[in-house]
Length: 442
View (cartoon, one colour):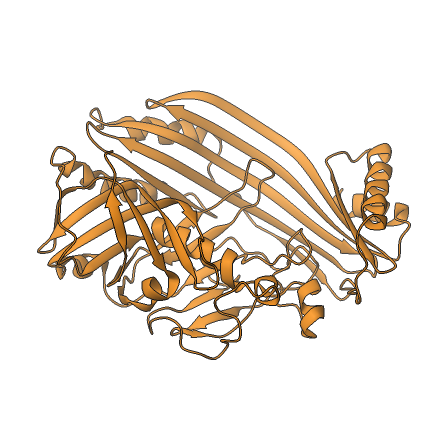
């Protein structure tokens, strides 16, 4: 279906060159509140994106209609968009060499019945806790085609669990996801999360003086990496002179323990074998032992610097993305890292992040989902949330230890369309610098 639809659009297109990306989603979602299912939704949809070139101008458009009238309206939208846009000195040729088809052999195993089974097991023996959040699974088919004959088809299954676990004094947030739902493994993780509630009746206050260790759980780490990607890793941010990493390829930026890749071939990831611009993807080393190795290009920014695309093209021209982010784990187990902390702060998650000064790589935001005080290797109680202001260099340059355990942290964008995306990260990292400004009253 997607292949024939793509060919219909190419036949209807009246410009010089075009690229089509079609995403078909089958999405099943169960929302829960107060440990009770309150909404069950099934969505089937098709999203069509078209990039078109008319002379030295580029236009883009979107529709979710695959009827003939919808296709013709899409082509007209792209033409009008292009003819009213600026002219570019150079225009890329969309790739024609892509010939790829990949279908997963089985789904995630997290169907509607499995979701209700999960919920029933979740509330069992947890009378003092309340659960809120969403349980979802999907099959996503991605088809990319170019006017020159390039074609790629990728079929992806995933599941996603987003929970807030609420006790008497404490609420923590936690995410699970990936390719295959492993019930036993997920419930082992949830049982480990429940250990935090041993301390929910012991709120504590601490002086920051003397705190030498900060532990970032994988969710907090992911949020920082999202903003590092957005602020500093794309070729566009370098070309616009806003990245603090500009002209620093080959330089030591962060700790030896920071190795970060875009890697579709690791076992735990939900793999993207080509990008949304028809470029086949390869493993990309972005940081190797703290050394900055690679700027991320789409076909548009690559043309500006006269290099090849790195296979990070998104649905938006000049905007590159990391499809399969992976940070290399360490050698020590999490338990051993925590046991050696005399005074420290454990941070589960961050939010409301912003970049006040991109030229210096400054980042600010707040904690959420649980902050805990560690003394002599043991959690002594929970802390209030806090605001922080620091730099990526200080944070990732001060990494002391990285756990050997990894977590698969999902990040799906279901408000627009289902785009399965997971971060494969160490369970925790221990850092020596994290500038907390003040604690809140909640």
